[in-house]
Image (cartoon, rainbow, N blue to C red; front, side):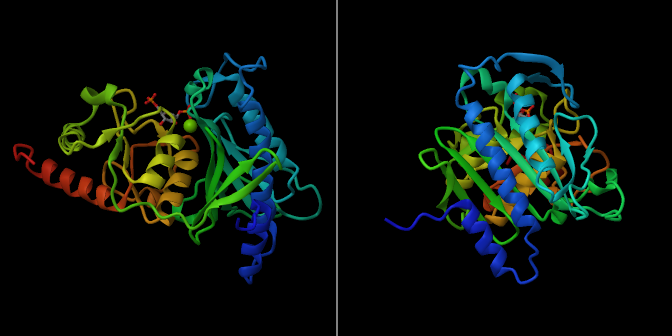
Length: 337
Ligand code: AHM
Ligand code: MG
């Protein structure tokens, strides 16, 4: 049996390998790991504790907030506030960003953006959900409190990003720009242990993931591409939790699409704390992530914190094929593919 490598050990080793590392990012990643363990504990017993059911509040995007969302949000904020390495937080559950006062004279240089519990509509029915996080360097003077421009980073400016999926097992997958690694939580020792080293997404796969219920609300070229996937006898898998749908595609190959609809003319998913971090992970694993204008997600310039975007993400050959398909089809709508 190969030696157990814990998340902490792996992060410290990666820091040592990076000559100009200062240990701040290491500390931040470890704090996120701690928050993930705390959230995992509650997610796994949500049915026993009175934290199910809608909290009644609605979040910045107008979605109903489940109590577990708020619990996860509070725990992540608590861990990051105490880390000393984070100077600001942006969360799906908070209308505005939260400046964090320096614990000591140290001026932390990282901001963290996250969706504390993605796929929250799945909580009450025991279907997997996830936490998504993105770490960026602040842009403003470290002596001052953060401001909005410290959070409006293009995806290519992320320093680290990843997700935690609370499913049949709890796995943390992250990248710092040098590949992607996965760590499975071993409850018997309370540690995330390296379980998926240097993850590479298959060039193509048998799955496509889209909410078929909105088919008639998609643009014509999207509908034709979905028809094409069906003609290829690809298997439709859609859980309603972006983290879970993309986690499958990361390991088995495939394509995930959330195009714009009449209800969400710019797409439903949020650029800064859902699409950018997942695009960073998928690109680092060899995949691609674009919007329905066929622009690279990680090159999009954010203009507001809860900005939404359409997204097509997954295996590189399948995203390329979808691009060619849309270019050809939208060039000559009459042309049958
Ligand atoms: P949430 O962050 O409020 O849970 O919303 C995002 C979720 C994604 O995880 C998922 O892919 C999508 O919403 C599902 O939306 P829909 O139910 O419209 O298909
Ligand atoms: Mg979400």
